[in-house]
Amino acid sequence: MGRFKKLGFAVVLFSIGCLPSDQETAEDPRIALNARAAAHELDTDYVAPPGDPLHHETAGFAKILCSAVFITGLDAEDAAANVGGFISHFEERGHVVDT
Image 1: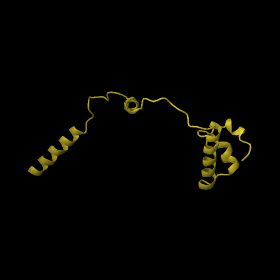
Image 2: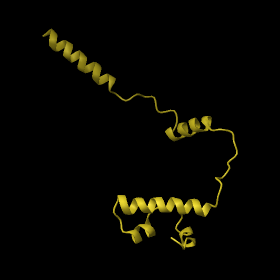
Image 3: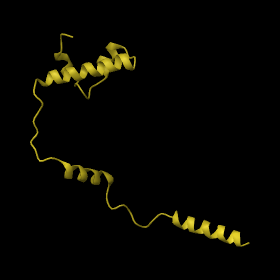
């Protein structure tokens, strides 16, 4: 019977330990993440990379297009029309005429 008492005591302790605490989280995790990022941010001015922005967007578009065609197997025309808008804006792609 002593063994059952120990087991019962362990179950009660485990159950009490699993109860939710009354303490709520102090702040939103996103706020803490942004505060941590701001603490590590360098105090420098933003300088855009050298070169024409259209060239950078075109290079990014080419990389995304090749990945869409050769890795995922999408049709090239469909990939060009629908994939990679976060790298090369769809409006800017019309400026690229010689591919």
